[in-house]
Image 1 (tube, one colour):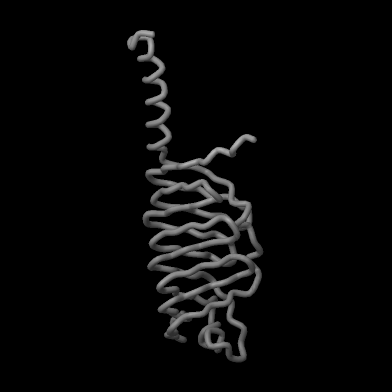
Image 2: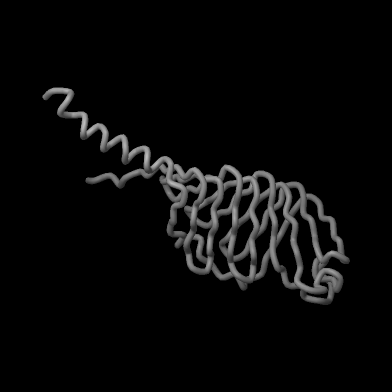
Length: 177
């Protein structure tokens, strides 16, 4: 076979390959990250700073957050309480029950649930809506498959995610027997 007869095939393969590497937005299923965002949120850390006036609590050190089977780890997590929750003792576990509005995590952020995990520089979790937005060199792994991008938006209630920015993927096909 002559090289000139392979040129159209090589061009088609190169076009498909380069198209996959420069995709700007990719949707992925997040069945494993689907969960109940109404469950209690548990946080552990090395240090805690509370600002009752602002309604915030800042957890630093080795921060670990759990809600049902959802796990988040980071160097720093800032918790924003709804209304007067922190001022009424919600952040310290006092008499009032403060509702967490959102969490902002930064530094070595990892979000996981079962076989799926996502890593990035920052993440914001809107508890009421179940939306997580991760930014900064995001790496998503689902089993043996990996996807990377600049941003990842996860809808935990719908079980879906959207990667944006220079999206790159590595899919491992199933082995046939």
